[in-house]
Amino acid sequence: MKQILKRIKKRFRKLDDRFDCFSRYELQVEGWLLGELITLLDKMQKKREIIGFDREITTVGNKRIDLAIDHKDARIWIELKHWLIGEQSGESWLPKDYVRELNHEFEKLEEAGAGENGWIAVLCTRNPGLRAWMAGIEMFNKEFKPWALEAVDNPNDYPKNWYFGALKARGLKG
Image (cartoon, rainbow, N blue to C red; front, side, top):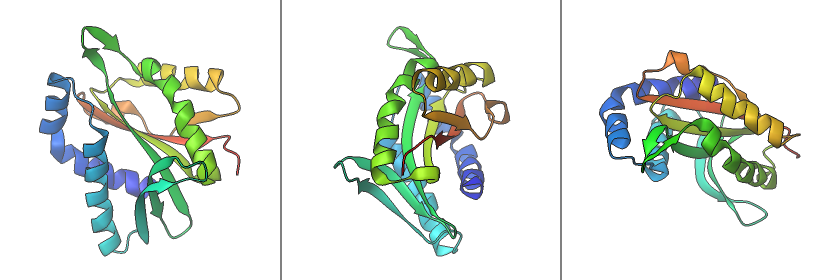
């Protein structure tokens, strides 16, 4: 997954104008995010950096997982989120305001049998900063035990207008 994250970060660094626009117009666009990632994964597959990928995979419970990437060692299951950080419709939003919805993503990952290969990838337009990011993760981990989120990178390594947070889903059955 680290190789994939590195490629996403490199690609998204070229898209600063989009992230500024999403923030200015208070726009959350998970469909756009999925499209960008599929474009990148297609290139990675052609270069044989990954084996393949699927999108919108139906689970046993008839729910859908956004992405599954076949890597040499395993299938990586990913749920995507796009969070607008800061002012939106007259309210202020931080990761802690969104994080409670992630329990539904955990349910889907369990139904898919993701086990140790479940991830939640969150594009934040406006970087929330390390303190706010970790506060959201800690809130989830406290409220939804035995499920837990584990951050694998740091908002401080990203520009101010965006952050692509990869969260390892821990405690999944299966």
